[in-house]
Length: 375
Image (tube, rainbow, N blue to C red; front, side):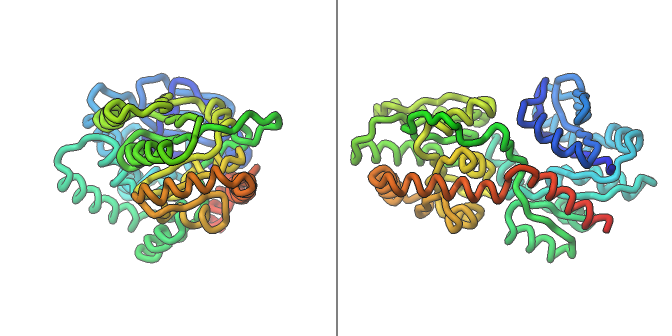
């Protein structure tokens, strides 16, 4: 069994969610799993995974610097004591310390860099940062350094990852992030499917304000008597305020900001909703579309890279022109007028999600990486 270390600032919380526990349970059948992340909580250790938390401060800028650029000693000690064989860094910036440690020490491990879309765009747009140009320049330099010195790239979007792999002459693999098929599934006892839902962080990249404008027009033109449920965290308070002010100013009814919910509650909401709405400006391979598909929930999304293929081509998702409110409203009306289309889209989304992330797929994909690294 290889010792696999996942390195990045993923927040696993004080206690593992059922979804994370299921992920590590599956991976632990073939790997010993270790994680270095960042939080204020105590370390987590059970039969499936050991999580080492680098302590956070109350200053998020200091936290970034501490984890990405000053974490050499902790990283070295854990990798050496646990005899780590494979390090998987969450992005090129996370890979900076693993690359340097491998260069200046006798530690010998394979290094994977994960690519889940434009990490820099996500970082700079999800929170408020100063010195954008300086941060971008430094990040690009680190990115080149990390990719040049890694062994493998794991990604979710074939075109983007293949281009990076070709540029740096690296092996790569394409598959979705973990999707908990034991939590997200179509319930045997169907609930009334009625509401529109959005699931994700309320940030500009996700286009929530655009969806609210479209919802307003849809209600005007169609006799819709359901609700629009917005489920997710609010890391950008300014953007949340813009959304709430718009609802108040336009006197829009039927919209609920539910906040962040655990996976089992999201699965219940998916099983009782009519359609999932998306308006992202960019995506990799959205896990939310796979999760909704496992619940047989169809979706309507902007026609962008990462969604148009495979979700729009292989089925389950109706596509509209990006940032075109009229086109989205027409898709919504078309969807609710055609019951047969609703059923077929649900079936297509389920079949595609099973193909991408059904039982055992995640472990199978990781085993293929191990084979590629070690032969």
